[in-house]
Length: 487
Image 1: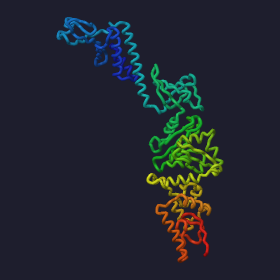
Image 2: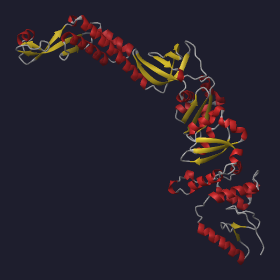
Image 3: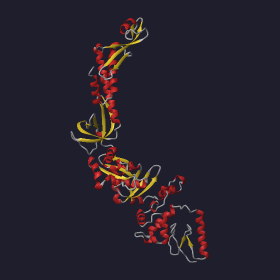
Image 4: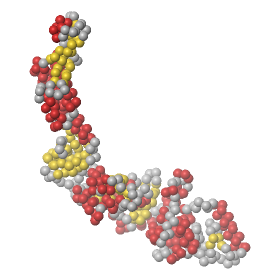
């Protein structure tokens, strides 16, 4: 056993096992052989020397006057020959030469040691790789069986099952393959790593390797959905205001995203911006299609309608419904896509009004983000009109009303009186101002009539009480049509 220390060091180096686990394995093997020889191993004591160069085996027996069980007891007279300082009732350790074990006992010990070393090796490998689940592993194509590809990744063998292979891909023997570690299985020979090239996390990890901003936590991935071999959608957001998350992921001239696309054999990848507003997020999720308008039909059931131009309809749906299906999974909404002509046949006024009312009258549950304050947030508003107004600095509803009252809004290029009337009507139908009270409006209407009768110089809207002039055709505040008649 003088070579035992070298054997232990070799096991530590080759199998990655700890010294303590190897010592425990040897001890169990010796005890198994001892038990096969003497019928019990309860009194077997195994001791290693400090240098691990040798191991000694002892049989611990009780000193008695009249032996009943020779495997556990020893006569006083025999014990005195081993040690002069002993008495009845004491325990004495008697060294046993392992070479005296029966051949069958030695075989049992070897088998026990082999099994223990194998299990210990499995546990060591399992513990090493279990924390690597979700990471990309690389190795060489070794062989194929029933469509499953076996890959050499170093210490262990990995398998890429048929179900985890993209339909676009084909590999050859000795080709280097990268894939995501998704599971670990114990086998009779050790462990087997289960890999995947279809998992959405595989694409996400590839992107993380290409984008330093993701590694530095400047840009984060919100969610990734995928139809392997066809299309992947990745929603990202920036943790810094001055960093464009989509631009960072795509890279200069698309170099970063192209590296990922090449790894996936030209699978299409849409990198889009995540937005907390479901309207904007759903618009982004349906890229590359341009969405004109998003209407939430049922917030609890998460049903939404996306309205697109006729030319964008097939692009929004995608081949065999792939684009909208991925958008559903990415946003976690049930998205129904319709053209403007199809949507015109639906009555969405009630839906828009109900959503606006929920936002305006939900009391303390409504956050500042939910309150309608800009023209673009108005339900049913023409977004092209809102964009033209915003381009000249008219974004807030208050700014719009002031511009209408002053007449400046008519100078905005591309804005017609019909557009102004339409926005006014939506404001009148959906917006309640914080300092406005119903009773005050009614009184204002009465005051308007009284003012007209008294001096004929000031005029007020009979609907909302706002001050008006003779040259106005519509109230600048509520949008009601005005007709002046002489009495």
